[in-house]
Image (tube, rainbow, N blue to C red; front, side):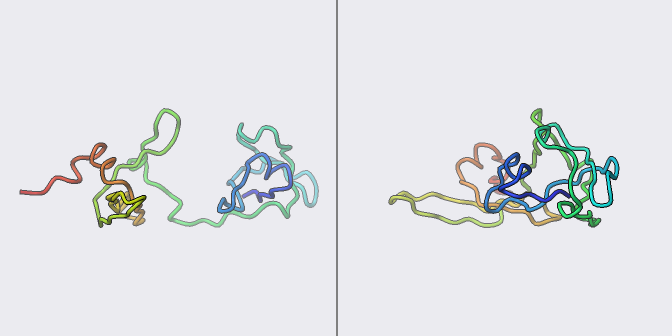
Amino acid sequence: FLRLHPTTGVGRAIRPKKLSPKFIGPYQILRKIGPVAYELSLPPQLSNLHPVFHVSQLRKYVSDPSHVLELEDIRLRQDRTLEMQPVRIEDSNTKYYKRKAIRLVKVVWDEKTGDSTWEVEDAMKDLYPHLFETPS
C-alpha cells in the first residue's frame, strides 16, 4: 500500500479528504531500486506521480479473507462502479426538515457484511418496489 500525504505529490494527486484512507493500493512492486527505494506499478490515474517511493511510504499488505469477493456477487456497471442490489428493509424512521416530514428506510445491502444505509423511502419505492410488497 502507498501512504498519502496532503502536502506531497501523492496527496495532491489523490486530493484526500478528512475521512479518506491513509494508504491506497495494493500496487505491485516492479523492482528494488536501492536499499530503501522501490518502483511500483501505478494505475493510469496516478500517471502524474513518479513511480519510485521510499520504503517509509509503503506498507505491507496483510491478507484478510474479508477482502476476497466471490465472482458471482460482483456486478459492474459500464463506468466500472459496483452495482449492489438491496436485500431487505430493516427499519423505518421519519425525519423533519423545515417542517416537512421525510420518510427514511434502513436498507440492508449485503447479508454477509451487514452493510446498510438510510435511504429516502420514496426513492427506494421507485427503484425497488418489490421490497415494499407485503406478502399475502
